[in-house]
Image 1 (tube, helix red, strand yellow):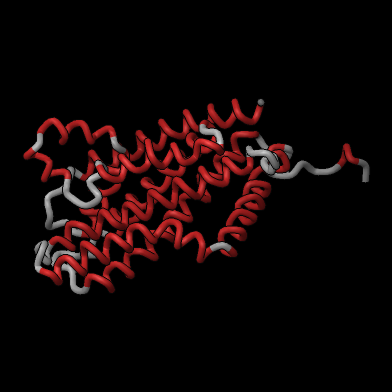
Image 2 (cartoon, helix red, strand yellow; image 1 turned 45 degrees about the horizontal axis):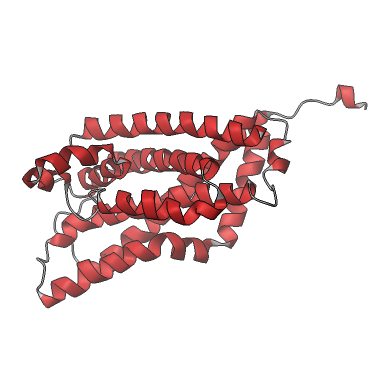
Length: 265
């Protein structure tokens, strides 16, 4: 059989092959992945969800407010890091990305696969942190799993939005500036992402209540509250889902443009 008569490889097969390769690497590095993405949320759970309530320094009911934010934080950190850090490495000195760019699929499909892999890893991190946090904090008033479809939708959309954000950061920031990414972008996003306090509580500071709406983490945190603790005040579900869809589309668009520019260079 001559090369001209060989059947072309379906893009879906190449996509799945690359995805399986990334998931195999992630499975082998699972302990390091969980430490990297879950350590900070769990430390906050230990201090604010266990130690301080035991000391009587904060109300025990605070765990109801904090748990959804901690799950949102683990989801977003893992989604960003699972895409941004490997992307920086692949485009670094070793140029490991070149073997995938030479595969018989459109260049942008390689980037989409990275985002898809980031979503899956974000889901794994959230599934790990949720029961661990519940075990550390003990009984949590108002915790409910009756809104499982909403929980799934927020998890997938939140993972997609932050994986796409990781795609943009991983292709737009040089490896030597990775520390700058976490100091200037990720750290403020965490502190003003309504992870440890509800968005409704910012009514006491009206200007801040509207300024934080530019923070994508706000919508994941509030979405987790709507799904896990529906009895607490939270953003309207329609606004949360619409914002997450819009953010996913926006970050995918700018992320794919940055990926194309980096790949062509």
